Image (cartoon, rainbow, N blue to C red; front, side, top):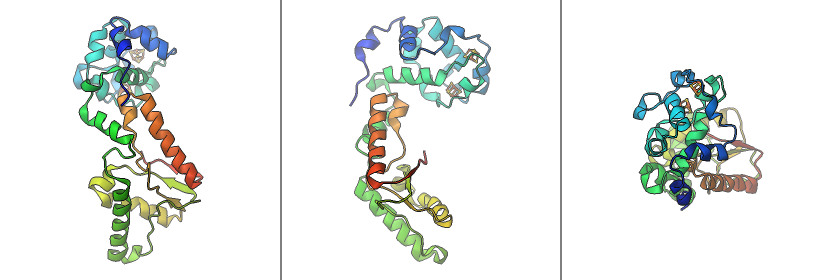
Length: 239
Ligand code: SF4
Ligand code: SF4
Protein backbone atom coordinates (compact mmCIF):
# COMPACT_ATOMS: atom_id res chain seq x y z
CA UNK A 1 0.00 0.00 0.00
CA UNK A 2 1.45 3.36 -0.98
CA UNK A 3 0.71 5.95 1.71
CA UNK A 4 0.33 9.54 0.63
CA UNK A 5 3.13 11.81 1.67
CA UNK A 6 2.01 12.41 5.28
CA UNK A 7 4.83 14.84 5.99
CA UNK A 8 3.96 16.83 2.90
CA UNK A 9 0.32 17.00 4.05
CA UNK A 10 1.29 18.32 7.51
CA UNK A 11 3.41 21.04 5.96
CA UNK A 12 0.65 22.03 3.63
CA UNK A 13 -1.42 24.35 5.80
CA UNK A 14 -1.84 27.46 3.65
CA UNK A 15 0.70 26.04 1.20
CA UNK A 16 -1.45 24.00 -1.12
CA UNK A 17 -1.09 26.45 -3.97
CA UNK A 18 2.72 26.23 -3.74
CA UNK A 19 2.48 22.44 -3.70
CA UNK A 20 0.30 22.39 -6.82
CA UNK A 21 2.61 24.82 -8.63
CA UNK A 22 5.63 22.70 -7.71
CA UNK A 23 4.04 19.55 -9.16
CA UNK A 24 2.29 21.27 -12.07
CA UNK A 25 4.23 24.32 -13.19
CA UNK A 26 1.71 25.31 -15.88
CA UNK A 27 -1.26 25.31 -13.47
CA UNK A 28 -1.83 29.07 -14.12
CA UNK A 29 -3.78 29.42 -10.88
CA UNK A 30 -3.31 33.20 -10.71
CA UNK A 31 -4.49 33.67 -14.28
CA UNK A 32 -8.08 32.68 -13.43
CA UNK A 33 -10.50 35.40 -14.60
CA UNK A 34 -13.41 34.01 -12.53
CA UNK A 35 -15.40 34.01 -15.77
CA UNK A 36 -17.24 30.79 -14.91
CA UNK A 37 -16.86 29.11 -18.29
CA UNK A 38 -15.51 26.03 -16.52
CA UNK A 39 -18.46 25.81 -14.13
CA UNK A 40 -21.04 26.23 -16.90
CA UNK A 41 -19.99 23.04 -18.67
CA UNK A 42 -18.82 20.99 -15.72
CA UNK A 43 -20.91 17.87 -14.98
CA UNK A 44 -19.88 18.07 -11.30
CA UNK A 45 -21.01 21.65 -10.72
CA UNK A 46 -23.44 21.70 -7.80
CA UNK A 47 -22.32 18.37 -6.39
CA UNK A 48 -20.81 18.36 -2.91
CA UNK A 49 -21.19 22.15 -2.78
CA UNK A 50 -18.40 23.12 -5.16
CA UNK A 51 -17.65 23.93 -8.75
CA UNK A 52 -14.38 24.41 -10.63
CA UNK A 53 -14.42 28.20 -10.40
CA UNK A 54 -14.91 28.13 -6.63
CA UNK A 55 -12.31 25.38 -6.38
CA UNK A 56 -9.78 27.62 -8.14
CA UNK A 57 -10.62 30.60 -5.92
CA UNK A 58 -10.17 28.51 -2.76
CA UNK A 59 -6.78 27.41 -4.03
CA UNK A 60 -5.70 30.90 -5.06
CA UNK A 61 -6.81 32.36 -1.72
CA UNK A 62 -5.15 29.70 0.45
CA UNK A 63 -8.30 28.01 1.80
CA UNK A 64 -6.34 24.79 2.19
CA UNK A 65 -8.35 23.20 4.99
CA UNK A 66 -11.53 23.30 2.91
CA UNK A 67 -9.75 21.98 -0.16
CA UNK A 68 -8.12 19.14 1.74
CA UNK A 69 -11.43 18.00 3.18
CA UNK A 70 -13.95 18.56 0.37
CA UNK A 71 -15.43 15.49 -1.28
CA UNK A 72 -15.98 17.51 -4.44
CA UNK A 73 -12.63 16.16 -5.67
CA UNK A 74 -14.38 12.80 -6.00
CA UNK A 75 -17.39 14.32 -7.77
CA UNK A 76 -15.07 15.76 -10.43
CA UNK A 77 -14.71 13.17 -13.19
CA UNK A 78 -11.41 14.64 -14.46
CA UNK A 79 -13.12 14.79 -17.85
CA UNK A 80 -11.18 17.88 -19.00
CA UNK A 81 -14.19 19.90 -20.22
CA UNK A 82 -13.20 22.83 -18.01
CA UNK A 83 -9.74 23.00 -19.52
CA UNK A 84 -11.25 22.96 -22.99
CA UNK A 85 -13.59 25.84 -22.09
CA UNK A 86 -11.15 27.92 -20.05
CA UNK A 87 -9.74 31.01 -21.85
CA UNK A 88 -6.62 30.72 -19.68
CA UNK A 89 -6.11 27.00 -20.29
CA UNK A 90 -6.43 26.08 -16.61
CA UNK A 91 -6.60 22.32 -16.09
CA UNK A 92 -8.75 21.89 -12.98
CA UNK A 93 -8.95 18.11 -13.45
CA UNK A 94 -5.20 17.75 -13.14
CA UNK A 95 -5.19 19.83 -9.95
CA UNK A 96 -8.01 17.68 -8.57
CA UNK A 97 -5.91 14.60 -9.30
CA UNK A 98 -3.01 16.04 -7.28
CA UNK A 99 -5.29 16.73 -4.32
CA UNK A 100 -6.74 13.22 -4.41
CA UNK A 101 -3.25 11.84 -3.98
CA UNK A 102 -2.83 13.89 -0.78
CA UNK A 103 -5.96 12.54 0.91
CA UNK A 104 -5.02 10.15 3.77
CA UNK A 105 -5.97 6.57 2.90
CA UNK A 106 -8.54 6.34 5.72
CA UNK A 107 -10.37 9.44 4.46
CA UNK A 108 -10.78 8.26 0.87
CA UNK A 109 -13.96 6.68 -0.50
CA UNK A 110 -13.60 3.11 0.73
CA UNK A 111 -14.81 1.37 -2.44
CA UNK A 112 -12.39 3.38 -4.58
CA UNK A 113 -9.42 2.66 -2.31
CA UNK A 114 -10.30 -1.03 -2.07
CA UNK A 115 -10.54 -1.32 -5.86
CA UNK A 116 -7.11 0.29 -6.19
CA UNK A 117 -5.61 -2.15 -3.68
CA UNK A 118 -7.17 -5.12 -5.45
CA UNK A 119 -6.08 -3.76 -8.82
CA UNK A 120 -2.46 -4.20 -7.80
CA UNK A 121 -3.06 -7.95 -7.51
CA UNK A 122 -4.42 -8.03 -11.10
CA UNK A 123 -8.18 -7.42 -10.84
CA UNK A 124 -10.13 -4.56 -9.21
CA UNK A 125 -13.13 -6.69 -8.18
CA UNK A 126 -11.00 -9.41 -6.58
CA UNK A 127 -11.95 -12.37 -8.79
CA UNK A 128 -9.04 -14.66 -9.55
CA UNK A 129 -7.42 -15.08 -12.94
CA UNK A 130 -8.62 -18.70 -12.92
CA UNK A 131 -12.22 -17.55 -12.39
CA UNK A 132 -11.90 -15.04 -15.23
CA UNK A 133 -10.74 -17.77 -17.63
CA UNK A 134 -13.49 -20.10 -16.44
CA UNK A 135 -16.22 -17.46 -16.86
CA UNK A 136 -15.08 -16.51 -20.37
CA UNK A 137 -15.00 -20.13 -21.50
CA UNK A 138 -18.34 -20.90 -19.87
CA UNK A 139 -20.13 -17.92 -21.43
CA UNK A 140 -18.59 -18.70 -24.80
CA UNK A 141 -19.69 -22.32 -24.66
CA UNK A 142 -23.22 -21.34 -23.69
CA UNK A 143 -23.44 -18.76 -26.48
CA UNK A 144 -22.17 -21.17 -29.13
CA UNK A 145 -24.65 -23.83 -28.00
CA UNK A 146 -27.71 -21.59 -27.65
CA UNK A 147 -27.24 -19.26 -30.62
CA UNK A 148 -26.77 -21.22 -33.86
CA UNK A 149 -25.75 -18.07 -35.79
CA UNK A 150 -22.78 -17.71 -33.42
CA UNK A 151 -21.70 -21.34 -33.19
CA UNK A 152 -18.21 -20.38 -34.43
CA UNK A 153 -17.77 -17.45 -32.02
CA UNK A 154 -14.34 -17.28 -30.36
CA UNK A 155 -13.01 -15.68 -27.17
CA UNK A 156 -9.28 -16.50 -27.23
CA UNK A 157 -7.13 -16.21 -24.12
CA UNK A 158 -3.30 -16.02 -24.22
CA UNK A 159 -3.21 -16.41 -28.00
CA UNK A 160 0.40 -15.56 -28.75
CA UNK A 161 0.90 -13.37 -31.79
CA UNK A 162 -2.73 -12.22 -32.01
CA UNK A 163 -2.86 -8.85 -33.74
CA UNK A 164 -5.09 -7.17 -31.15
CA UNK A 165 -4.98 -7.42 -27.37
CA UNK A 166 -8.32 -6.77 -25.66
CA UNK A 167 -8.67 -5.89 -22.00
CA UNK A 168 -11.86 -6.32 -20.01
CA UNK A 169 -13.71 -4.30 -17.39
CA UNK A 170 -13.65 -6.66 -14.39
CA UNK A 171 -17.23 -5.83 -13.44
CA UNK A 172 -18.55 -7.84 -16.39
CA UNK A 173 -17.01 -11.27 -15.68
CA UNK A 174 -17.73 -10.64 -11.98
CA UNK A 175 -21.43 -9.72 -12.05
CA UNK A 176 -22.80 -9.53 -15.61
CA UNK A 177 -20.76 -11.96 -17.76
CA UNK A 178 -23.22 -11.94 -20.68
CA UNK A 179 -22.26 -8.30 -21.28
CA UNK A 180 -18.92 -9.48 -22.69
CA UNK A 181 -20.58 -11.23 -25.62
CA UNK A 182 -21.63 -8.25 -27.83
CA UNK A 183 -18.02 -7.11 -28.25
CA UNK A 184 -16.90 -10.67 -29.06
CA UNK A 185 -19.57 -10.73 -31.77
CA UNK A 186 -18.42 -7.41 -33.23
CA UNK A 187 -14.78 -8.57 -33.36
CA UNK A 188 -15.86 -11.87 -34.92
CA UNK A 189 -17.99 -10.10 -37.54
CA UNK A 190 -15.19 -7.82 -38.68
CA UNK A 191 -12.66 -10.66 -38.65
CA UNK A 192 -10.30 -9.26 -36.02
CA UNK A 193 -7.54 -11.54 -34.74
CA UNK A 194 -7.65 -10.82 -30.98
CA UNK A 195 -6.93 -12.24 -27.58
CA UNK A 196 -7.48 -11.69 -23.88
CA UNK A 197 -4.74 -12.43 -21.38
CA UNK A 198 -5.15 -14.72 -18.36
CA UNK A 199 -3.33 -12.17 -16.17
CA UNK A 200 -3.50 -8.38 -15.80
CA UNK A 201 -6.58 -8.51 -18.01
CA UNK A 202 -8.58 -5.88 -16.06
CA UNK A 203 -8.71 -2.72 -18.13
CA UNK A 204 -9.84 -0.43 -15.33
CA UNK A 205 -7.24 1.38 -13.28
CA UNK A 206 -8.68 2.62 -10.02
CA UNK A 207 -5.32 3.89 -8.81
CA UNK A 208 -5.76 6.70 -11.32
CA UNK A 209 -9.00 7.64 -9.55
CA UNK A 210 -7.38 7.61 -6.11
CA UNK A 211 -4.55 9.86 -7.33
CA UNK A 212 -1.82 7.29 -6.66
CA UNK A 213 0.53 7.80 -9.58
CA UNK A 214 2.98 5.07 -8.54
CA UNK A 215 0.29 2.41 -8.23
CA UNK A 216 -1.36 3.59 -11.44
CA UNK A 217 1.97 3.23 -13.25
CA UNK A 218 2.62 -0.17 -11.64
CA UNK A 219 -0.62 -1.71 -12.90
CA UNK A 220 -0.27 -0.10 -16.31
CA UNK A 221 3.27 -1.46 -16.68
CA UNK A 222 2.04 -4.94 -15.76
CA UNK A 223 -0.60 -4.69 -18.46
CA UNK A 224 1.95 -3.53 -21.02
CA UNK A 225 4.38 -6.35 -20.08
CA UNK A 226 1.56 -8.83 -20.66
CA UNK A 227 0.82 -7.44 -24.10
CA UNK A 228 4.49 -7.57 -25.01
CA UNK A 229 4.77 -11.19 -23.86
CA UNK A 230 1.88 -12.05 -26.14
CA UNK A 231 3.51 -10.09 -29.02
CA UNK A 232 0.27 -8.29 -29.85
CA UNK A 233 0.51 -5.33 -32.18
CA UNK A 234 -2.46 -3.26 -31.04
CA UNK A 235 -4.06 -2.67 -27.65
CA UNK A 236 -7.85 -2.29 -27.51
CA UNK A 237 -8.56 -0.51 -24.25
CA UNK A 238 -12.26 -0.75 -23.43
CA UNK A 239 -11.96 1.61 -20.46
S1 SF4 B 1 -12.89 29.05 -17.08
FE1 SF4 B 1 -10.75 29.32 -16.41
S2 SF4 B 1 -10.52 31.49 -16.13
FE2 SF4 B 1 -12.73 31.08 -16.16
S3 SF4 B 1 -13.31 30.75 -14.00
FE3 SF4 B 1 -12.82 28.75 -14.85
S4 SF4 B 1 -10.66 28.42 -14.36
FE4 SF4 B 1 -11.04 30.62 -14.13
S1 SF4 C 1 -12.46 17.93 -15.10
FE1 SF4 C 1 -13.70 18.08 -13.21
S2 SF4 C 1 -13.93 20.27 -12.92
FE2 SF4 C 1 -13.34 19.99 -15.05
S3 SF4 C 1 -15.28 19.87 -16.20
FE3 SF4 C 1 -14.64 17.78 -15.70
S4 SF4 C 1 -15.72 17.30 -13.80
FE4 SF4 C 1 -15.74 19.54 -14.01
